[in-house]
Length: 323
Ligand SMILES: [Mn+2]
Image 1: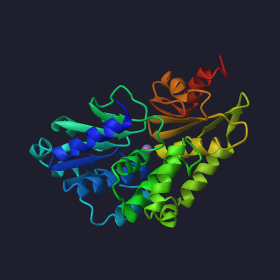
Image 2: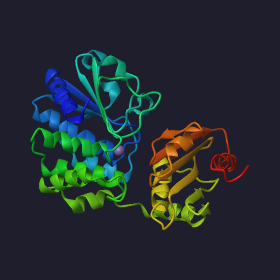
Image 3: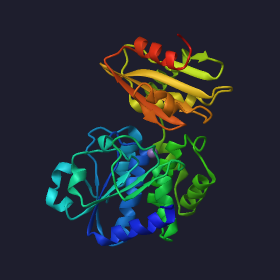
């Protein structure tokens, strides 16, 4: 079904239910929470009740700042709501389509219907729904939400326009990746609506210690086959998934680099790989060999019970670097 038809269909669904629950992926980032806030405002402006489910206990600094700005928004944790209310409500999932990644994956089955707005590749545990808009060509969930507003000619207040712009800015690495004319068009509308660019820049400010940690990983990058940047973290440091992703993003910014792979420990017994590609090599396909997933540009993998060295060897075999 094309995007516009799906937009109309989803609008009808919102009108059908008195209450809408909105939920993003675990480990909220600015796109997940920004797009959730956008949908929250949309639903409220239709005269419906809306709640954003946030079960995460800790947030990265930007998300924390966004939540602090969204003062009048009704946030809840999933356990506070009775399943009988879920059974009379609509579920709106943003920035993921996979059940296992949700803030709470158990509650999906309580809802009669689920809507999905996402830009990630589908996977094995993609939620089955007739109301899903999974657009791999979109930069971010926030871009889709912006188009949703624009399609119905709905106004976006400046604060919400800033939230959505932050989501787009994060996911495109400041309009340098996965950015199409539609992405710029969405940003144009958000700025026209009063999005505050300096507020967005403030949300995206980095933590100096984390920055230094990432730079250390970058310092030891190997160049394979002239186009592959291959980096790995220290054995003694646990990285956040997003940190590996940010390093992989950065490595693509250099001359001649077409793909990047970053390996690092995500916990004591899990090693993660984050991969990026300018598009000529499908990193999703490459990491699927090691049990991961993703798309052509953006992929990740989690491997349990192996050391960084072992994962490095496996990945280098897949890349044809060693026998
Ligand atoms: Mn996103």
